[in-house]
Picture 1: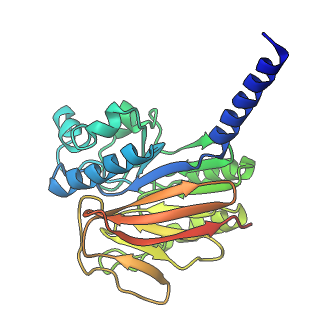
Picture 2: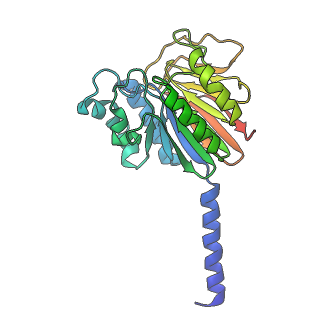
Picture 3: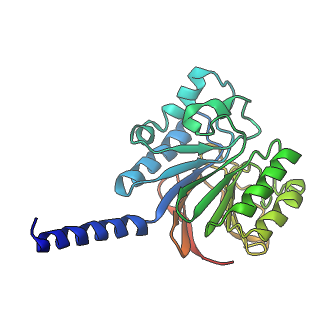
Length: 274
C-alpha cells in the first residue's frame, strides 16, 4: 500500500476512535414500572422513539419491576412486551429490587443482576454504577459498598436503588434510616448522582453536600399531586408519568425528565465536581 494511502487510513481510524471515545454515554432511568398497563407501554414507546433518534446505551430500573404475580407470564407481560423494541435492539436493562419485587428476580437474565442483590459495573471508562438493594440493606452490603466506593477511581460515581433518601413525597418521602448509612459514604467518596424510585413521580432535589438526588418512580404508576414542594425541591413533576434521560461525558452529566406525552418537564447539567 502506498505510504500516502496508509497515512490517510491511519488518520481515518484515529478520527473514528476519537469520535467513539467522545460520544456521551446515554442512559434511561425508569422506576416502579412493572404494571403491564397502558402507561408503561406509552413510556416504553417514548424510549423507543429516543433510541431510534440517538441510541440509548442502557436502561436503569429503580425497583418494583413487577407488581402482583411474578411468574414467567408476568415477566413477559410486565417487562418483555412493553420494552420489546429496545430488547430486540440489544439495549441492556440493569435492575435493582424494590419492596414489591419477589426474591429470585436477581436471577432473571434480562435484568443483568447475575444472581446478586447488589452489584457494581463500569459501562464506560470513567463511569461506575453502584446498584443497591435498599429493601434489605444489611451489614454485609454496607461493608461491600464501603470497599467498592473506596477502590473506585472513576470520575463519575452514580448510585441507584429503590427507596429515596431524599424525597418530598407525601406518601413516602425520605428514608432517614437509610440516609444515615448511605449519605456519609456518598459524600466521603465523591458520589455525584443518586437515583431512586418508590415515590410515584419525578423530583430533582437541591444538591445535598455536593450530591445530586433524583426520584424517578413514576414510569408506570403515578401519585398525582403528591410532591410537597419544599426548600429542597429543585424541580418536580407529578401530573403524569415520566422517565429520566442522562447523558454522561467526561466533564458533565446532562439530564432531561420527559413525560409520557414526550414533553420535557425538567432539564439541566451537573458539572464535574469533587
